[in-house]
Image (cartoon, rainbow, N blue to C red; front, side, top):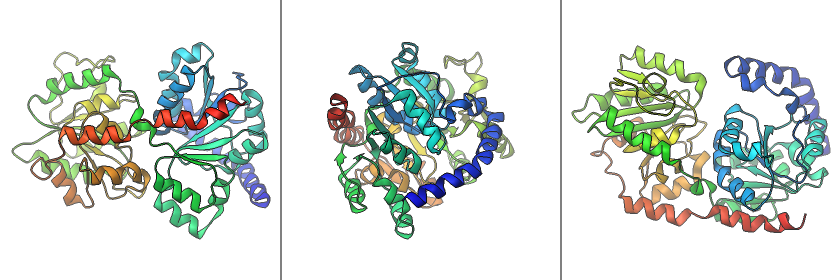
Length: 427
């Protein structure tokens, strides 16, 4: 492992100019990428010794961490969150703005994968505990924490089948995972998988996303928007659509719009840099659409004369519950690409049936359970997708089925807090 870490550090040192160039280029579209660059080198203005460290690399991980961070703050802990993407950092700064202004929390960039960068991070925060959301396996992070005496846990963790197959061919990542102090995992199946590669101190705590707070203002605005834009038409929301899926989804949408009971469609790209691109695709297809930024004010109230034709393009960040609340059913993006589908829990939390594509390895739990419970439709082909858009093709679950599924999976925050309590009280 020492030889690997030395090689890893060498690669990062040689590659650092390219990483900085990447951040600069991304910064042209989103200036946050290139802001506070000193933090990425381990130099931090906030000093918060004894904080609980939560690493949430991007938006999805940060959203799943929200209920746990709230529980830590309610207990009187101070928290530092680390991120790599602006979306994750912005979410932390928005949700916990009051706590940040009160110096009870800080949101910063994760340092580059170099030992001297991490020394600066640990000097600034001296965390009593580290929690890495999902399955972010960064060698220098893991072993720098270990060298600094910081117990670092995988949190809300899963070990997808695709990763297992890859690691069987190149077992470096399991060796790094064994460097964690332990793992707080989503299910017993995941616990068995981590144990099989030698991870110690495993606790089954469940899926934190089931405990996420739902913003009532967004839900109310979504219901009002549905009435204003769709009237009596049923609504299908395509959420977190990623590059490579648009052609497939737009073909299915055009087919659905040609039917007598044509739905109103809400189409939400996952990344803001794709908003203009997707608007161009919709226009090129001759589809009647409007952008959220054009027909809604900042407070989500419709502007005078607001109309969207057949499609609302969701070109905003942090408003997913607004778009989901408009829907009768939701298609979660990513599943028709090799990268895998995104979160299905948010639509289910609003009582909306959800459709996923064939690639579900990224959300194996709880998607397999949701499919078995009948609250999620697994569209393995484009024809399946077209069928799933219509109640005639897929009647969908009852409200009671969705409520029962949610009730069976709630409570991960409490179980996680119980598991980490000895680490919070003994340090």
